[in-house]
Length: 140
Image 1 (cartoon, rainbow, N blue to C red):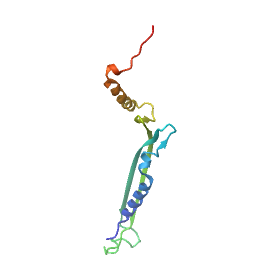
Image 2 (cartoon, rainbow, N blue to C red):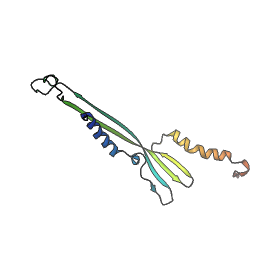
Image 3 (cartoon, one colour):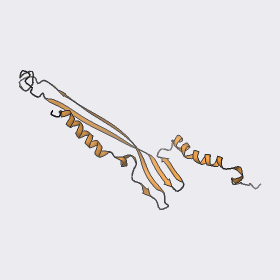
Image 4 (cartoon, one colour):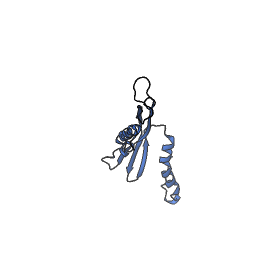
């Protein structure tokens, strides 16, 4: 059975999308700093895709439609198209060090992200027995 023209349109568009997007689009190439930290950019990718087409019976004097040639199996004219769009938004950076992994958001109003960054340190401090906690003295 012959391939329908819409299949060619969709295959072409999806091949182009596959070439545009890969894992390095979301997690960028890691960069190592002089003090041993590894920094990786993180992005959010949104993608949309659409394809469509139609066949129609020719009107007028084209002589190529099934209706005009008695339905003898002639191929009907086809019209179609496809398209895709992609949005790439930087979200922040993953910073990997000897002490752990932190996410540094690009926007400063990311309160929830900052809270998640502080919670492990807070739990560690609360879990440390009082006898081992450093004491501070104030001089009057």
